[in-house]
Length: 189
Image 1 (cartoon, rainbow, N blue to C red):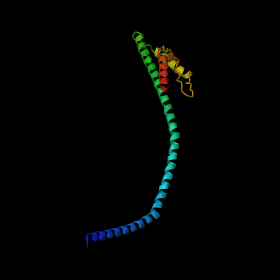
Image 2: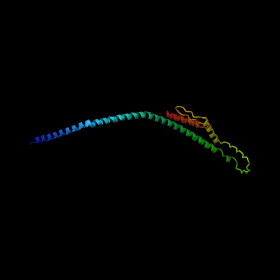
Image 3: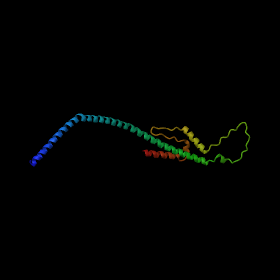
Image 4: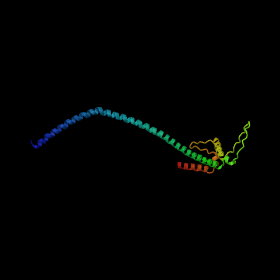
C-alpha cells in the first residue's frame, strides 16, 4: 500500500464517524426542539408577561406615592422652619424674662429685716395682702393673655405664626421675625 491509499483509508474512517455523529446529533436536536424548547419558550413568555404587569404596577405606584411623599416632605420642611422660628422667639422671651427677674429686687431684699413681735392669734385670720407683680410676671401674664386672644391664622399655602402683643412691645423681636421670614422665603424662591 502506498502512502496515498493509507491516507484515503483514514479519511474514509473519519468521514464515516462524522456521519454517525451528525445523525445522532440530528436526532437529539429534533427531540429537544419538540419537547423542551417549546416548553422553555412558553415559560419565558409567561415570565415576560408577569414582569410587564409588575413594571406597570411599579410605575403607577411611583407616580402617585412619590409625588405624595414629595408633598409631605415639603410640608414637613415648612413646619420645621416655623418651629425653629417659634423656638427662637420662645428663647428670646425666656431670656428677657430671666433678665427682668434678675433686675427686680426680691421682696425679702426690699424690706429691712426686723424681728417681728409675735402677736397672739385672733379668732379670725387676716387675709394676706397680694404682693405686687414683678416685671417678669407682667410679661408672662401679657403673653398668656395675648395667646388667648390671638388665634393663629392659616392660609392655604403657608401657616402664619401669631405673635403675642407682649413680644411686639419688646425691641428687636419683630425685626428678627421679619428678617427670618424674608430670608426663608428668598431661600425657597
